[in-house]
Image (cartoon, rainbow, N blue to C red; front, side):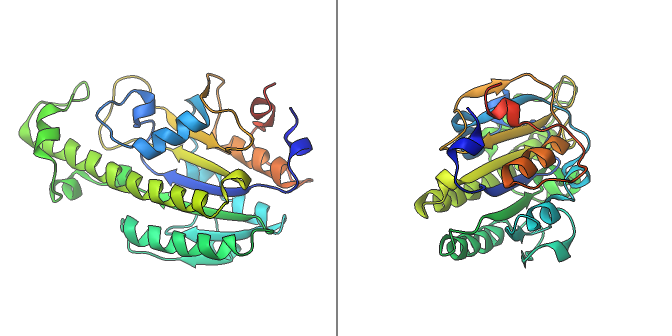
Amino acid sequence: MRIHDIIDRPPNIVLFAWEGMGDCFGIHGRRDVHAPYSDMLGYQGMVFDAVTPTPLLRQALPPLPDLLGRAHYHRVAIGMPIGHLAQYDEHHATDAGNVEEMYVAAEQALVARASHAEHPFLLTFCLDPGTLTRAALAELSADNELAAALTLPEGLDDTPENRHLLAAWYGQIHRADYYIGRLMDEVDDRGLDEDTMVIVAGDGQPPFVFPGPPRGTLILRWSSILPGGWRGESPVSFVDLLPTIAELAGVEGLDLPGTSLLPLLEGS
């Protein structure tokens, strides 16, 4: 299957960037992490199980808005942008960590883009629950039942304080994931899903260290094109998204780092 043979325009790109999250999702076996909507995107799309956690998203993807500007994408940043702010057509600044405010801004942007569906768009939605400090987590409320039932990461002392911190962090992940689900409902309800590639990426080291080597998360869902339920062990990096997206957008002649994932997406 050659993707360019079956599409009549480049895809919209919706990027959910989970900063400081690594691979702390249920789809990677973190049973106490309740992020069903992010996990569902994995079940509906392609999950890369061998993601190099470095370089981080902000180090890997700064060229993305300029790259897609060359393909006449409308570029929208929700919260902290990836790349230079001047390279976006819209920037919706929000209070740090206010994911509900981010959702409202993203919803409004999607409504506007649905009315101009002939033009592809980039929407970046940057989440950072993994960058919360232990001091910040200590100030948050936590589900006491969850705290009592948690399986603690190896090497973390089993104390009431640590159980509270871990439950509070998981609660922030769950809250952010809820708004991802609502935003994906907007994508589907606005009839944008078949023309939209959704990317879920998690990078960095979370505030609690889990056993095993650090890993990143990379999930791609494009409901009309990519196979659901696919998992791959081929080593990939976030920089590989740049040549992949460039090929899909029809941008040529750029000296980009990374290796295109298009052969994997096309089943080669």
